Image 1 (tube, each protein chain N blue to C red):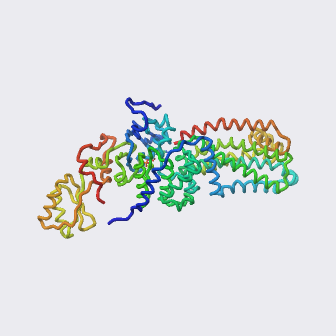
Image 2: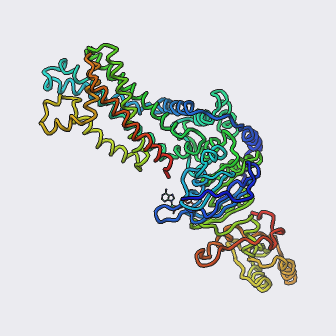
Image 3: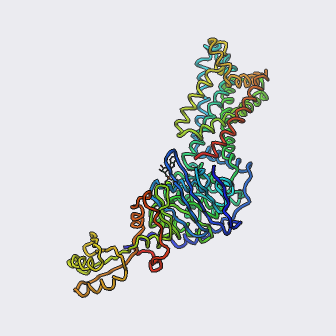
Length: 349
Length: 278
Ligand SMILES: Nc1ncnc2c1ncn2[C@@H]1O[C@H](COP(=O)(O)OP(=O)(O)O)[C@@H](O)[C@H]1O
Ligand SMILES: [Mg+2]
């Protein structure tokens, strides 16, 4: 059985509580350990991203937290309430938007929202007003009277999220909110997430997109095979990989090879040459080598059209992290120090 | 190289305003949420009227076919057969369409609607109760179709309007109770196709190896034993009794006890599975 132990010193009341706190959370399907001992500690406010590839256990973890399935081991508390002992309390404070559309496809968008409003306890009148308000705000007014099965992917995602905030929850779970969306729809979803956070809702979202975590999340938990392999801010995760990138475009394509050799000697790493005949880039151990490198180039008469420095992107971070065998080595942890400050800005794209 | 993907600024502002104003109401009671789910069933009938086709075409075909094709052979003439077969077909049709309860629930699970609803802070059984309310409406509609057609065919119930109303009410009570079995199956089975398969294997024998179409006395002895223990036989006896104006209170009592037993067993079992469904 699961024990519902109350750690000493927990502050009572919703305000000071952690949004999510799990200890050794396990969920198995047969002998598949979909969630295999996850310790999460997510504070209130902001966006927390759970990042992981397909099959990592993201959906399963979220479903446990939203009280849809029971854990097989460990404990999970949501806004201070145990998901097994007090599921009704949890449900009254959180809402969940699943990975796949979850409204009634046969009903219209308007009807779905009114239905949810009524279930939350709005009067018929108020439920209609609220539905109208959300449809209007999410650019769905024209589709209000159309059956949801006739919506496009982006519209479905928006009506789905609208359904979750008919009553704005204290905590919102969003399972892969932008998977498969076009860039415009994705930006619309991001705007909704940011608005939710601004209004005071804590958002926990899962994603396979590193850029999404980078753009939206204050903190990121990287999971793979049901386990946490890294945790921290985007900057911390990047810093833990220990390198940035230096991108350069030479003025004369004929000089690219010379420049590559010169800089390779300076940085001690190999150049990577893209299909653009002017461009070359390096992985960088120490950014302070860059001024000297630029002087090297001008000293040899090589014109520099443009250059930029970027952090490693999260793809590189993720590869570096999952490259480790999680079974044999200890979990790599994000370093809290290590130049996280000078790497604050988001990489230029 | 930049792609212009940012939404209009007014979008962000509208979103912020709408998101911010989701004030929480006091919450809804179990009766209210059950009725809301019942309303959803009505909306579904409105948007997908095709689903009523089974409810209306099935009984129509059955009553016409059996009366005119087999009626003469079974009871000498179609007119002579009509009073016997109308209550039987009424029972058969409504019992058959109870399986749509399982289809509806199974469909909700497949489409993810189920997950959303289970994550809501509402009285948990209300989804099922609401769905059953919607189903009961469907049963009523089927009953009206059958009675209307048989009226056109010249059927006049000896039990009068009272007898017919009592018969239908008893039938609805039984089918409402039987639906809990289907909710359980709907929760347990993987696909709507398997629901269909299982329900057909159960319902066809259950409704045909009974006294729906012919008196059990006309069957071989071993089969009569099966017919006698078949719950549908008792339901038909009770329904026929009311409609014929000679109520069979023994059969009525049996039906009520069976209904109570169905709810007592499958109600809690369904709720158990519903709460633990993963
Ligand atoms: N209902 C289920 N029954 C059996 N296995 C499941 C079920 N749900 C998920 N799994 C398995 O659990 C693992 C984690 O899945 P999931 O949580 O959906 O990952 P993600 O959301 O990160 O893609 C996968 O191996 C998946 O096959
Ligand atoms: Mg998933």
